[in-house]
Image 1 (tube, rainbow, N blue to C red):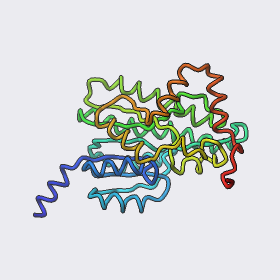
Image 2 (image 1 turned 180 degrees about the vertical axis):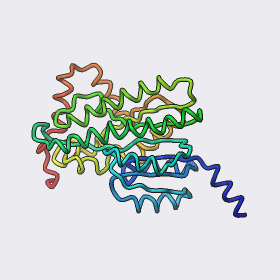
Image 3 (image 1 turned 60 degrees about the vertical axis):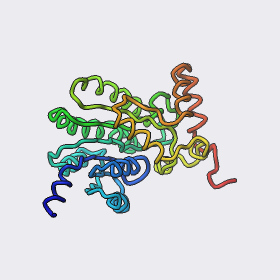
Amino acid sequence: MTMAMDELKATRPLAVVTGASSGIGYHLARCAAQHGYDLIVAADTPLLNAVKDLEALGASVEAVQVDLATTDGVQQLINCIDGRAVDALMANAGHGLGGSFLQQDFKAVLHVINTNITGTVHLIQQVARGMVARARGRILITGSIAGFQPGSFHAVYNGSKAFIDSFSIALRNELKGTEVTVSCLMPGPTDTEFFERAGMETTKVANDPRMMMQPEDVARIGFQAMLKGEADVVAGLRNKLQVAMSKVMPAQAAAQMHRKLAEPGKVDPGGA
């Protein structure tokens, strides 16, 4: 019986999910667990509750609490993978930074860039090399519809997501014929801790529930796109319309539209 269980466990695919302690990343990990994957999950915040939930779904789960903005943090995650075959990589870790660029602490600016861009591409390169060598693997990268918009009062984040959206498409093209697919999930505003962590509590976008999607819905859309090997997916009809508008509007008009949503102090979150 023990040998049979060990053999069954050995046949389970392995998924690596970053930013998995909450929000979209947590729900991507849940999708993977529900589809029979074992998991390595990483985040810069505690993962204990997430691990309990994921194990209750039948997954074997390893957790790594690290700062993926640092080379050491990414390396710790790679060390945890330890050469094992990764069947799915969901590179979801990222965070924002609201407010006027000139007033932002540059260490905070650099942390956004290093989390959203540097750490992401470092991890993807390391994991994707193994996937290509085995001729098997799926990669889902969390970009954003923000990558289509000049992000007034969220300038560094939107710029970082423009990089990620573009990088995803280019990498997918490079990997044609390798049996490794790259998909890009592009959500819009989502009901997570994102806005609080970004210091955007007083912005219009953070206080308009009509604009928000639920993270479990966004994750499900992205996970299904990854399984199908789709190139990219914009989550939600409202967000699809916003992307279409951004593509045809003059850049300065798009920046002004974003300013109305993201400029601090436009809403009192404690008010009626």
